[in-house]
Length: 319
Image (cartoon, rainbow, N blue to C red; front, top):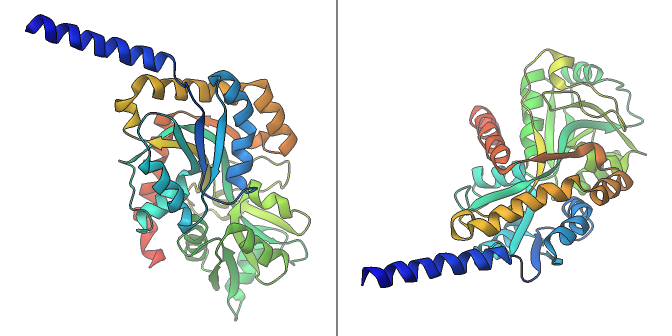
């Protein structure tokens, strides 16, 4: 009997290795929890061609916008933990969804393949505004009798948290105007409907003919190819948190244990695809090259913990 059990166990292990060795044997479904043409779509298309070549299978995009990305995550969670379904979103966005109760899926459910780009949140104003520097803006805000208006992408977004931290740490007289979408928030600034906007640097660059950045919510100075700006910490002397938008490829966390070899292959090939010449050329063509920043799954998990400490410190501002 023991011999039979040993043989069956050996056959199971061998079959698992064979199946994983042939992974993927069919197309990968990649969920975009937003409309086509947005940041998640464009960044995914930068890496997809090279990743397909390495994997030997096509990557099929499925667009599932709505509910702050939760329709897409619902679809991900309904699929087997076999490595054939991935999703992209920013770590900070999903962390906010979890912290504010928008998401019923936690980090115990969601794991990482890796991170593709890092897009820092910045303070934006209109090109015609009288404020040339962030300190000009802060000085005006402290003297303002009528509150300055700052647009953000959603009431529970990272940009809203950032805006309220800016108000708290600088003492400006301002109010937050949340929109339903980052593009709407930036369009409001471009149309001079608000005084300022907080949003991601690369995403905002599409409106560079109308707006400009003054400072970043980062712990180091960001790329100066579009706007040469200081960090808020260095400009003001106050310690601002590092509020960036890491665009991560995610998967069901239990894929690591239920399909470990398939998961390992996804992680390894994702990293290879980021470094591939084809990816680098597409990134350069799209203006995304300076924002490409590979993070391992472990580094993605570390950022979750870092972001959570910021949330615990400032969460009362979101009430």
